[in-house]
Length: 141
Image (tube, rainbow, N blue to C red; front, side, top):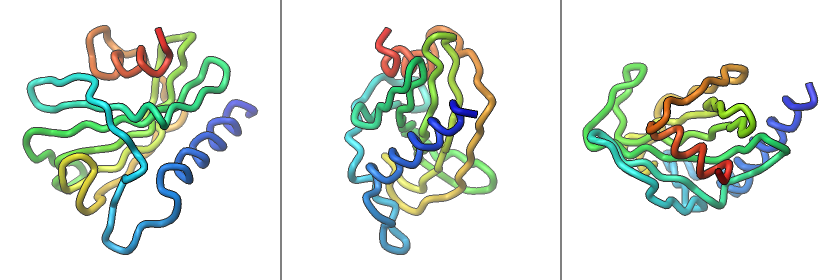
């Protein structure tokens, strides 16, 4: 229960820090994030926001952005990028998306589409994947 409270507090603090306030209607600016390119795959480039890293013991929260080369369809919505607040269990080398929002434009721009979340679904990442690379960055090892 204490871990859940810490995660909720971190997520709320992150959302407040990154948005400052609610963006104007129709706007989906993620202006507070400073995206650093971490790598790329055939279908997407992926970025991390170092400023979003929040640590609590062996748990780390960090935002990442996947920018797709071609339009993706998720839940009936078309999108060119998605931003995910991800929780990393550094000790057990597992992670889970806490909140993912899909965007119509590149780099988290344009209309925000579907938003999903998942708590309690920590999973291991296969070595060499984007998520494993992002975990190494977030955990510092």
